[in-house]
Amino acid sequence: MNSQLINSKVMNNVLLHPKSQAKELTDWLHGNGGAGLEKALSATHDIIPVIQEAGLRGLGGSGFPSYKKWQFVAEQSGNPDKYLICNGNEDEPGTFKDVFLLSNSPNQVIEGALITALATNINNIVFYINPEQKTSLESIRSAVEQWQASEFFTRVEDKLAQPLNIRVMASSGHYIGGEETAAIESVEGNFPFPRGKPPYPAVSGVHGCPTLINNVETLANVPHILKNGAKWYQDLGCGESYGTKIYCLSGDVLNPGLYELPMGTPLSELIYTYGNGMLLEKKLKAVFTGGVSSTILTPQDIDVPLDFDSVQQRGSSLGTGAMIVVSEGTGIVKRVTEYVNFYAHSSCGQCPPCKTGTFYISQLLNKIDTGQAKGADLDSLINLCKILPGSGRCHLLDGAIKIVDSSLHHFEHEYKSSLSI
Ligand SMILES: Cc1cc2nc3c(=O)[nH]c(=O)nc-3n(C[C@H](O)[C@H](O)[C@H](O)COP(=O)(O)O)c2cc1C
Ligand code: SF4
Image 1: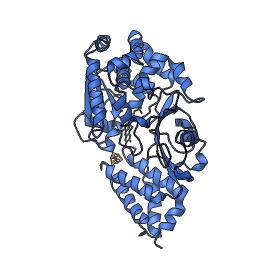
Image 2 (image 1 turned 180 degrees about the vertical axis):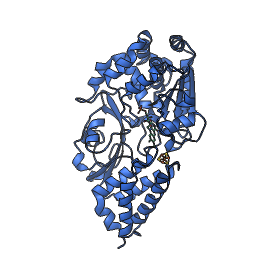
Image 3 (image 1 turned 60 degrees about the horizontal axis):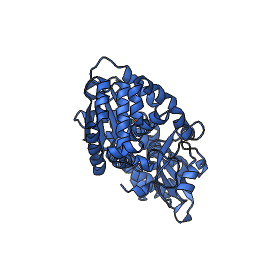
Image 4 (image 1 turned 60 degrees about the vertical axis):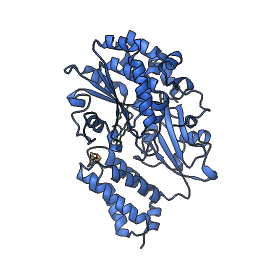
């Protein structure tokens, strides 16, 4: 992964700060590292309250308050084994932040995982990495070995009063393998079929043991919060939004890349200040927000602060922080067709409405996009968007429906003009 993806204009970044880009443990400890773990070791019971006060939320898409999941897992005492899965599956179109963090700054992710294990009394950590990302795998493997040989590691095991097992594994490479219960199946050596909930992973996950699943970016924030305090983290954001967010800016902008900005930075600033504006000075048409499993934003939302709650108030979701920018002149039907083809291909097939629904929607879209569809096909598409949501075991089906539904809402005229009759 090219380090030019990082924007140098951003002054207050943390995870993408040059000092955080340390592949060797000694470099990390000489720069930003170690102080957070040191504090965690000296006051283990303070870790969860600090994370709670900081307001850290899951940065893998859900935005769920991290301390709540940690607290659930910490409270589970009936099983001698507990697992932490660091979710680095990252296979959603437009999302490319975790691969960067794992490849270039594995130590902040590992230190975050060690602090999390201390807070929750976890004795098994699994780094679960997309197999296509060879550099991430190599980088995290090498850094884990260095941590295991360090004095810090012995002190963590002493504090846990048991051995700490760390495993670095390649996921199956399926998009669905990033869903939390699918990741648990993978770690057990099975095909990543999502499980029904409850039981929730915090109660029964890997081999029936309490399991915590956190995204790479979420864990990478942890050492910095412990080191600098909750107030410092809160103040990094804009207004009521805390911390920073790594936005993955791609599509029709002059400067695509990774931008770590205050949580709550307006979309306009991301596109026009950091992204340097639209390619060929074209007009903005739409933004596929938070990956491709959410409602599309349009120019009327250009002022939206990019944080979980503000984006949700516009009917969309911040998701992974991916922003795929589309300019005037781009066919929305074609673009949505490409994404739904991806979903149809990615469905694990367990739930008939998802397996047949994504397949059928993808067929309808391909027909509309190639000018072979009639009005009845468009009616079928609209109906499917009404009846399918909520009928899958995991969020994949709902995500696929959301982009079709919102593209119909904003760009129905493009669908109609693609019909053959
Ligand atoms: C289809 C699907 C794919 C997902 N892929 C990922 C992924 O690659 N990485 C990730 O962190 N979360 C992914 N998630 C979200 C996880 O289920 C889970 O919410 C997340 O890992 C929790 O971490 P966080 O609380 O730190 O965000 C996916 C969810 C779904 C429904
Ligand atoms: S909703 Fe789709 S991807 Fe999710 S479990 Fe069901 S079939 Fe699999």
